[in-house]
Length: 525
Image 1 (spheres, one colour):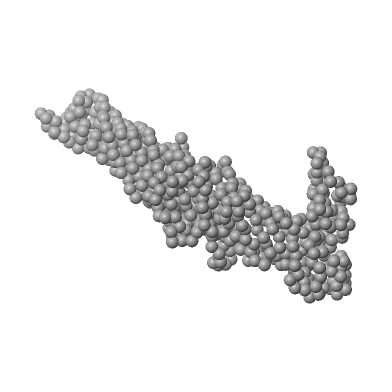
Image 2: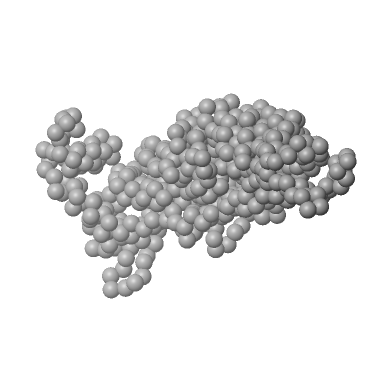
């Protein structure tokens, strides 16, 4: 069975002599745990990889001479030696908390074929031979650390092996002659194999494992604005539950990287071991993303009159009877467009309490009924609103829920006729609770948001005297629900990638929300 290169990683990544988790470093934003089920996956693939590599051992030709009693000195040659079979019968990968992981290969078997030739004066004898070695044991320890770039590194700390019983069967004319010195041949081949076995282990580490570890991303660019720092913040730690590897897990701006003004909270991983691998994603990861996009201005929205008119056109296409029908969503045969209409009308009537014929427009003629001084000071003038967060909204993870409470500034402007000038009118502060839904697909973490409560407004500053902001709440809730939240969800659809090595895929994904972090379990392929 052929195996993909990443199987070497899964087989050897767990063989680590490691330091304490996060010692001397801040809390990680991202932790990957490989469980004992992942270890079993590594064991199966490791057997295939090692069998393939050890079967390719090159046994050199052997030649020399020996004393054969009355015959005197006889020269010999053993050529075309090749391994016919290398059987790995048992690999035991055991976790040693606080110490590391040990790979023990026991009761293995190898058979070697070749040709022999014996020469004495003008007499030459030749034939074939079969040699078998049983009870081969191999013990391996790897050191796993991190380099200057934050990538994991692996090196062989210890390799030893022993060979038990050796037997040789020789065929050909006068093959009894070789029985006089078969022990010498057996010992030479045994010494060669003992050296070659550990050479193959070291070669596999440097030629397969090390290059593959370099495919683990240290930084990933999510878009033109931000990237994610997935460098290691400490060496992995072996526990009774598996191998825990801590990553930084921090979003950064691609234009200018600045220190994050808050720390990642501690992560206490649950005692889960049904899946091969688990990912603990701290709320710190999401909050550093919020900070980057907020500072880049990607949480700012401008509301213009044409945006409001698009919604008015959508709503005006339905009759009042459709809006008032309380059972329109109950029928399985209800047209999709009617269901959308019912949803919108229910939201408007029951939550926002906007009259059906209310002409919502960003115009002093329309909003003059809510703010009378607007129509007096700026008659027949279009308005424009700029919405931006006071600070980056921080997500809060509690068991089963992801919420955040953004505080937004809403600045209103009057667009002066026949001019590009805008006159600032007033500034509002808006507060609300928002619920977030998180999912995982194709190795990416995706999200969406829904309003958990209505917007609550307060007047922060006004150039047109004070007014009752409660009358504006319905309008802003209306716009937030059908313009801002859909626009935000469209950006969240792309999500961000998990730090997976090359050719690694997840299936049977499960997701849990714990205090301070998201916990994702999956099997790997």
